[in-house]
Length: 203
Ligand SMILES: CCCCCCCCCCCCCC(=O)SCCNC(=O)CCNC(=O)[C@H](O)C(C)(C)COP(=O)(O)OP(=O)(O)OC[C@H]1O[C@@H](n2cnc3c(N)ncnc32)[C@H](O)[C@@H]1OP(=O)(O)O
Image (cartoon, rainbow, N blue to C red; front, side, top):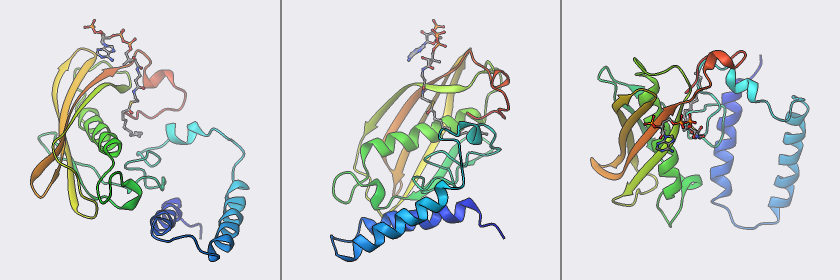
């Protein structure tokens, strides 16, 4: 039975986390060879070096670095959207996302907020021109550090629609307190999903 790619990605996540916990050790030479052997096996599985089509044909975001279950860089988070349009996800950030000691890297906060703001918008597009909604501006305020290994909530809601321009706001909260807040401007591109062969929608 073929193993789902998400299981392989999960195994990789475990390994990335472990690698950040060990020090230099003679055993690592052997581990490096083993990892290259696994990569050789994977490399034999594809012939396209830039397989963007795989992402464009997805029914769900499986390859992005935040929610993508098949992308080992992603935790991955599961974003839920409430009936009032609020998008939210829970996440315990671990060592791969560390910036200052024990704290979340600020660029990772930006990545996760961009993603969740974006999903809050893509779930409410009535009246918006039918292009891809891309981030045009993202403004963040870092109120408090986000500690690693603690439950954080990333949430966002759409705040306005003005033709091709859609705005959203959101925050990362820990223990009920806002640690990072964000405002974003998203613009519907002139290129529409229908102009991209095989595309099923996306952001
Ligand atoms: C289902 C499948 C699943 C897959 C999903 C995966 C999930 C992943 C989701 C996560 C995804 C995460 C999200 C991502 O990562 S999205 C990727 C990151 N973002 C980008 O790459 C965007 C790059 N920029 C552009 O493409 C263009 O510059 C855009 C399209 C933004 C505008 O270029 P365009 O030539 O079309 O614009 P226009 O000249 O007609 O202007 C139109 C209006 O907009 C105003 N304006 C323009 N720019 C700005 C600006 N920067 N600030 C303020 N205002 C701006 C402008 O003044 C005008 O206003 P007005 O005069 O009408 O009033």
